[in-house]
Length: 115
Image (cartoon, rainbow, N blue to C red):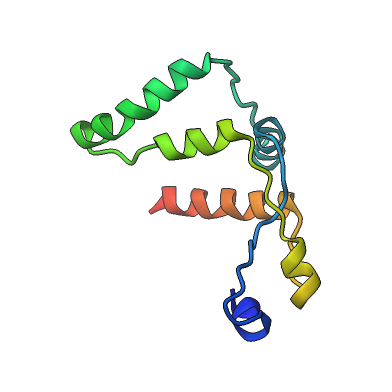
């Protein structure tokens, strides 16, 4: 974001995304980082959307953090493809490898769980 602020065009809009990957690819990266197998289930999309509507109520009742949202499911279903090409072209924006990002998230989460 600092690169966009310092080097971007005034009024310009930039998508500072990383890698486009499928949920399957993401799960494989998490499995590789954790050394654990993720149990995979395929659910009908109508059921996932219904569960996303109930998640905020469940979280409120049980005092948990929502694990999904209606908006997140809609974005995933839309199959939107985003690109950081403009940022790369205009101010040399670069992304790090997906595996490195997943490894850092796993390490962070393990530290959070210890506290």
